[in-house]
Image (cartoon, rainbow, N blue to C red; front, top):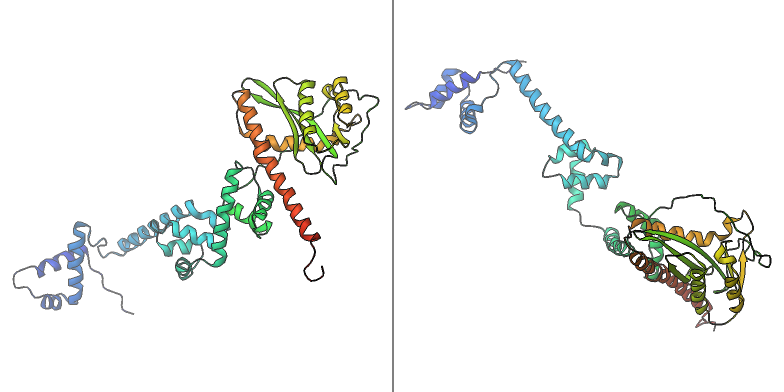
Length: 384
């Protein structure tokens, strides 16, 4: 096979110069030089557009190899720049690769990005021109609701509670689908951190025993309560919160806050819980053996209001796990994500969490259970 003839830069410039002489004939000049006329025309265009940078090679093999290496180096630099931005999507699905290509289509050639991400250009163009499917449109609609509820909860609502709240609104999406949409949108709840601390125990009164026995289930409201105290750091000192929870629903039926931890803090919380009862039927109130709960004034108050006092034995700190679980959720989802400068600021935020977030969510859960029970017990049109 005959090797293609090469010409130096000087030869090309001189050949183009001959065509610019008065009365020059390009075809005759080409025959005289032993080349084709279209070559001279191409050299003239290159010289007019490139000027001094025209004809990068001078016809030597080394120059051609150097030019090829420069082109290869430029290609590799582009690939490395693209990989630095989007190389991580190689571990993701093909749709995420297409989205990365679409985001950077103005910065890198599409074929280069498709080669780096191991997808076909035709597949990308087909995906980019394809209208969203019905499933994608429904996911987009559902994601709008998820973002709204997640923002309303101050970013603490995870997939399980999100699935519950959306179910109240009539959405039929599964828990796995909601969890997948939240993960793709980088939305998550606040994870729980396990902390085990030893707590000193007091002396339980002789007439008080453990009526709860770690049975945290209740078949009716206002039959089993738990009470405990926690503390919240502020810029003005500690704020103490006493909360009474109904084990039937997990709802906070009584609470009180004060900068001092004493028996009056507990009495106000239990009094609020007593006001929630529709009758005077006995209810078990379980607590630890703190001095506020073992005081004579507290025990007399429980007797006067038909409340049965229940306390754990020594070494049974897990008997009040329901109250500790609520406090852990409160601090994980609200308190530890704030910095309170004043006691009033902390009181306002804790009130907002209990009465505007936690209890309304519990109430919607109870309403949904009642609605499901009414549907099950409703008489059928056919059978009566």
